[in-house]
Image 1 (cartoon, one colour):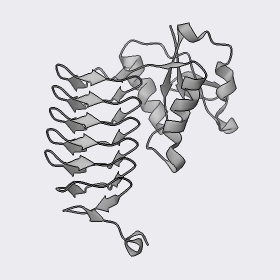
Image 2: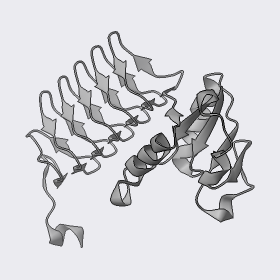
Image 3: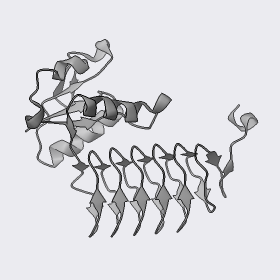
Length: 214
């Protein structure tokens, strides 16, 4: 089985490293930025743009989403959908230093990175990232394409919607729900449910007003 990483930036470097330490060979990366073509990421060549994978036999190829946070216009989710429509399957990534408890369901393309802990009976949706040293306690549900950033903590039975970013070092207390397309800023402490597409920050977390962004 050949493995390729989509993207050649910082998050791609992290997943290449996790794959290497898991004993997997990464055959190449692809990136839309032509300035990266021909370069190396941890010794792995950037082959070109998306078209570089056109010749690959789909049943003998797995791809890994190397884009980081959801980003503008949900770029990570759009890349996942585009590659699925081309017939590619996504590999699940589990760093060897991560702890994954019993009865955990990881959907296609989920990524559990270095030092992360996912406790018993959690479900991590397709293409979701549980990033470095994030802690996910029992019975949590993480939606597709969500990103739980480094050092974030989810207590038991938390629900995180699709395409939501829980920022670095943020905390969501037990039983809370964070809607789809939401942003929980770095260091925020969520003690109440958060609506779809809401942006919150602070301790306790409150909606970000326009003047707060300036």
